[in-house]
Image (tube, rainbow, N blue to C red; front, side, top):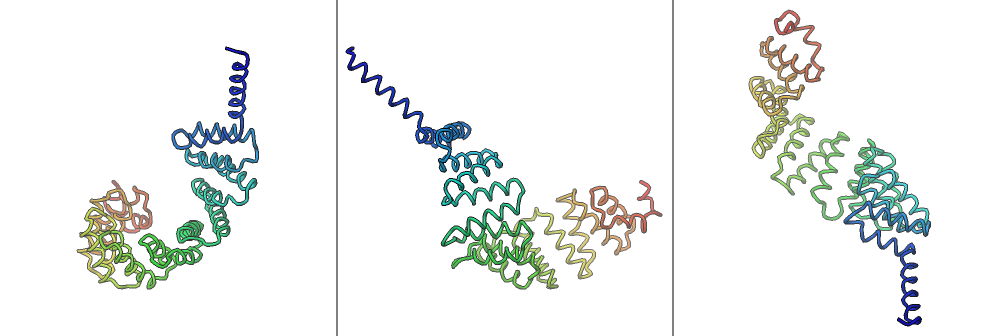
Length: 310
C-alpha cells in the first residue's frame, strides 16, 4: 500500500473518530437507544452534554428517559436545565408536572401544568383536562370545575363529562351533577358504575325511589359489586324497609367480608329489628376490621350480652 493511500485511510479514520466525539453524534446514539434501552440512552445523552452543556434537546430526552424508568427527581432536574437553555421547550413543563405527580407533589405538579398551559397560544381540551385533574388533586374543586368545563369542547367526551360530574358532585351541586351523569349514561348506558353514581346523587336530593331503581340497574349489569347492595341497603333503611335492607347488607358482606362499614350498618338494622345479639356481633366484627363509628355501642348496648365477653 502506498504512503498516499495509507495517509488517506488514516485521515478518514481520524475524521470518523472526531465525528464520534461530537455532541450531536453522541446525542443521536442516545436517541437511537431511547426505546430499546433507556439506561444506555442516558449514558449517551450524558456524554453529549459533557461535550455541549447547553444542548437543550439532550437534557429534554435524558429527562424523558429518566422519567420513563422512574427517576423522577433526575427527570425534573433535566427538564429544568432544558428550559434554562431553551425557554421554548414548553413540553418540559408538562413532563415536570407528571413527574411531580408521581412524587405526590400535587401543588408543584399544578404549577408546572399551569406554566405549560400559559405557554400555549391555543390550549387543547386535553390540556385543560390535565389542569382540571391537577386542581382537583390539590383540593381546588371550584378551580377544577372551571377547567373541566373548558375541557368539554364542542363535542364532550365520556371521560370529560364524567370528570366534570365528579367535580360537580364534590362541590355539592347535586342537581347539576344529576344532569351530567345522565349525559354520561347516554354515551355509555352499559357501565354499571354510572348507575351507582346516579343513585348516590339521588340519595343526596332525597329521590329514594329513583336511587333504588338505579342501584337495581347497577346490580343487573354487574351483580358482583358489593357497594351496589350496600347502597341499596342504606336506601331501604332510610325508607324504613328494614327486612329488605338486612338482605342487601348481607349480600354486600358475602361479596366483600372485609369491609367493617357493612357489618356496622347491618348491626344497626338488626338492632332496629330487635336482634340485639346479632347487632352486637356485627358491631364487634366491624371494630375488629377497623371501623369504629358504632363501636361505642359495644359498651352502651352490648356489655350485658354474651357477645361482648367472647
